[in-house]
Length: 242
Image (cartoon, helix red, strand yellow):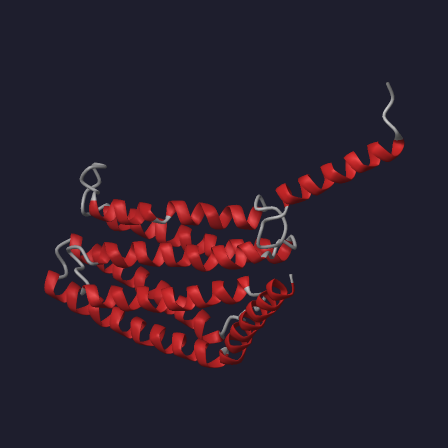
């Protein structure tokens, strides 16, 4: 029994729509399996290794003298992957809405893993510094996500890029200080004081960059909020008519 051509075309169209739903991510953009997004996802899952190595290095039979080199390796690898996913997205035209949301998430997971690790001895950063880092990133990331879901993309600011560089330098500098400390060339009080000073400088600029980001994008945030209100009013009018 042959299938009519019209029925076959309808079946193919339905199949195409199903495949499109599978390939297209719900928030828009190409497939999630793009190379750039995969690199970002790997960074999200690998980042906590820094925290585990720092805290549980005895479990992995890593001595205090060798530990700083392992930590530096992971820091440099994570920083390289951060730059790599952006390059891959632009180079292979894989800039997606999903990637724009995943990249800040990966950065936050990576930074938080490092900050939480440094709250433990021997660095022992004050917990309030870590809270301020998390507070800043949470506010900006939530705002960016809400606006993106409302169809308003908030552009990155130069201050945000400088903030990322300062935090990377801070993390690498503190980790490097573990080398002379492990060799007995730096007292633990000196390590704590220098590390805290570096972290305070980084967190002050992070708060500034967050405030500058909100101020510069206030118009777009307001636009997203107004669009939401218009959509809600439109929905109420539609229900009333029905």
